[in-house]
Length: 320
Image (cartoon, rainbow, N blue to C red; front, side, top):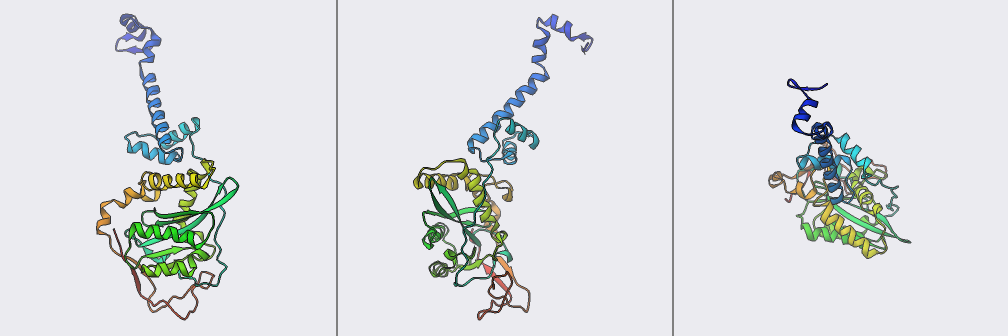
């Protein structure tokens, strides 16, 4: 029989006028049950706030931010028991049409060492199904903070779609000349109309190597996040409903609230507000000495062109 000092638990219960069952309910076992319920309640609250978009790792980080220290395995177990695990994405379909005669630009993004915002923007297009039709979304992200700074949604995948996202980004950020704009080799980004807008604002075009999604990984990652956490979790009846939901997801949730693992589990807005940005320096693109790089020939390697890019260092101006 268990003893407390020199008294048996049964004798202490008799003296206190409580049953043994009541004693155990008020002991460590009950405390553990109450603690588990508090953790479960906090997980439910976070999952509700983020509308089921967070997986167990992000919920674990959010719990720690709120002062609740919980092992990630325990978070995963509770979420599995309560059916709170995030919805998984569906198959991704490419939307790039690079079979055109327009100029293709050298990939400058992979040579950049980013130190602040407005040094490198990345752009991409994806499709979304609404009832019996497909619509198209174009986005532009600041590669340093992963913040969505421009987007447009249309029924057709034309140059007007990508120009809408670009003009929104320019109006919001007003970047200085020297910013690098990176995209795939699609017709919408290589068109004369699009390139003229880039040149008007002093932006330097950059394009991915053919068939290499890793050259535009941050934009690809955002598209997958959008589809997994918003698009595939909803049923849209109209383009207007979809537009409203995407606006809320991007402007209110993704940019301001969603914790990003690549940003040290901070939101893009929180990451951009870090003090270090006030003293950021220019990003640099370094090329080997005594060498010129040329326009991509289509196989990812440099090939001769009438307008070689001179050797040395190209600089993109940092705008905090």
